[in-house]
Image (cartoon, rainbow, N blue to C red; front, side):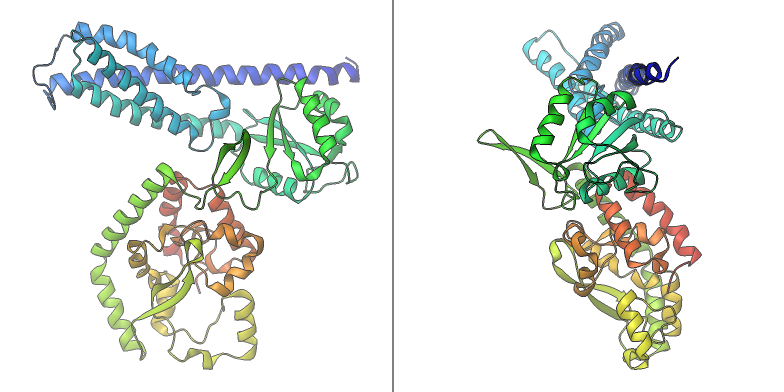
Length: 489
């Protein structure tokens, strides 16, 4: 086969692979969803009638034949609803919370339709307890099944499967920021082929290992020869005329998915909504990053765990307070003035770990290091008990009260002062979209050993990629990190 024939074969081969992967994923989801719905109806029947769980109507129709035929109708009916809600569309799968939200809406719609039929047809009597139990089971089992499938696909992505061959148009700061984010998220499903840029030399590497492979004038041929699945366009990188010509080329490339970077990458750590005004689509930035169901779950986690830990560890609080008083003169607690969500200042509570007039013990060199890094490796201000408290982060336990006051979260970015906020540069407004955390990625990734640049990177990664699952992962990894004592000073 000649070189030209091999190049021409790339798109067909790639399209075939992508279609095969999509068929595999769709069939896996269809079979799993059908099993989930069937198992939920069966378990709901057992719980309702075998255990006589009569919540609403104790004289409900019990016939197993009736519920068997009803399940035969409702199982494909629910699967059809899932299809209508886009639950087999790759655009809505394998990332973010859209898939889970659509699952909730589809399952709820199915139950509401059964209730509507029951209302319109008096002879059609369904046990409401059975319907309620089935709804709960389909929600819980289905969400867990989709979560497991998502992890299975993530594992496959690490092996080079289920990846979109992605081309980024524009090696400007916005394009580089998007590319860096995709590279740092191996489960994103993007395999970066390179940049299309009109200014940098072809063959140069704006990012290590990612080259400029062509000009926008050769866009169509590049997409075809490279077997591109997705294109990310950084709007600020090219002229309007060139952008329109690229859009025109994409009309002939129906298999290529177009993803448009808005030019507001630094701002878009918050979620967004699209609203039309006068038929003009406008992007609306949310004031906070965590909204909807994630906000509800995060709030429940914060208040429940904070109250439980405070109750269980109250004797430890008393012991630590006595040790602090005996070790050095001064108050037990220290109030640190920090900034929270919306840049609102508040006092973060901590056990005092320093001498009251400890600043007088610092040398000029230590003052300079403190100003630059925000931490001192060998800080003479720290008391003997304070050193122990810091090593295992026990000094931060009183911040559980800040969590209960709604000023902090259990998991989030590191709390900082107003002066430190300036070190976050263009990212500081993103930091203000979430509450600071008692623990976070910085806590499990090195603690005080991290540079300011690393802290900023980790905080931005958390804000951009927040989910309740990430919170739980951080929470479970925090305890081993604290017990090791590494990076604490």
